Amino acid sequence: MPVQTFTEEQVRRYHRHLIMPQVGSRGQKALLNAKVLLIGAGGLGSPAALYMAAAGVGTLGIVDFDTVDLSNLQRQVLHRTSTVGMLKVDSAEQTIHDINPDVNVIKIPVALRSENAFDIFKDYDIIVDGTDNFPTRYLTNDAAVMTGKTVVHGSIFQFDGQVTVFKPGAGPCYRCLFPAPPPPGAVPNCAEAGVLGVLPGIVGSIQAVEAIKLILGQGEPLIGRLLIFDALAMEFSEVKIRRDPACPVCGDHPTIQELIDYEQFCGLPPREAVGAH
Image (cartoon, rainbow, N blue to C red; front, side):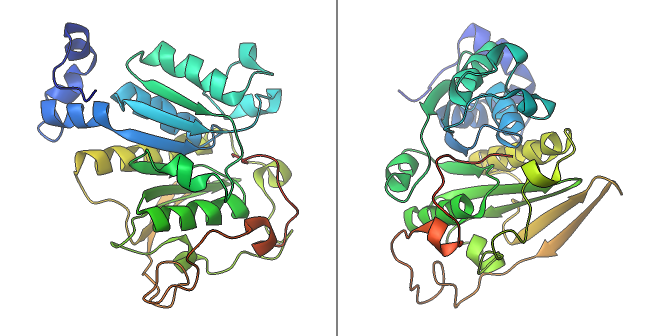
């Protein structure tokens, strides 16, 4: 049931939002009625989930097949030493409910695949992509374009991070930015190259800001803009990105009209799980 009125506890919890003209009671109700899907409960998904939960985003779906490992705790702040060995979706639910019991956590402990992506995406307003591998990124993009879902995309590597928003019909998609994946092995992932533990906290928090802005209809989302963060230099820069009319998915005459085998497209063997930073 959509939230129509606030309880006394909710008025206290969301008071700092309720007194903001850009949010107010109407915006807070929009947040409580919103449904956001997180692809990955890792380094980027963790801060995004924490801040969206604290803000009162009413439904958070979490897709992650993995279990919590000790090596995750250097950056994946959804999880705790006490939840090592637990499914990440269970660990995430526990932490989120400790922060805000208002949030309905939908646990989806499966690998995102061509066979299930449409079914998983259909109930959500916004997709937050926190994955660390190209097959899942291309799959997320194509399924989002085909279902008209907006994706808040983030990526990290060592000291560098990027965030943008892909909104079908309003700007480019991931394939406009990266028409083809790099050759296998050309780009090491975070497990191979490492990542500064605090970096995903910054990038994932920006993803949360973008998702919340989209729900509220406030500000200028990062549509057609790639925000780049260099932690070593402590500098933000921005690159304009444009929709490609010849894009095979979102272009004027799309040639990809159904989901494909994304591991094969990226030249990789089949994966068993969604990888998250």
